[in-house]
Image (tube, rainbow, N blue to C red):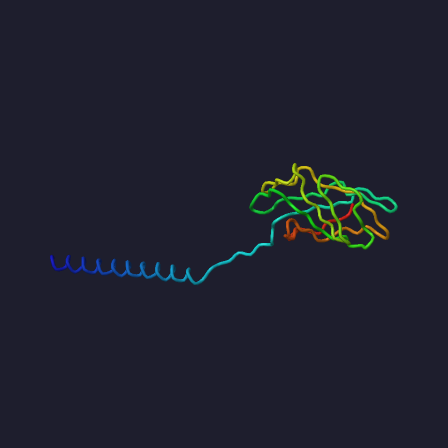
Length: 162
């Protein structure tokens, strides 16, 4: 009887050792494999979202009441610079508000003011910039916007004129 119990005990212990070794080997293989194989998620670039809407238009002129600028990145902004290009050669900014506007050719640059430069993550510029403009042939809406050098609207449809 003692021999039978001792034999069963040895069998049980050897099975446990085998299981322990298999578990240890599995953990080592998994850890080693994870070191060499990485899963990388890809996302559309998301730093900012810009909304540009022509609010009114008249012969030779137009108004953009507000340019919505949202921080969709991961860090707050202490200031911002918006850049875009007018698609048509006759478009120009004639007067602006809630931003410092400058234009060179068709390229427009708007920098933040002291009171609207700070923008928290997932927040929008509080006092949105806007402007009145002039046109000679047409007023197409810009299709590309950048904030502080990073292109916006990565996964959003392009802005539309209303």
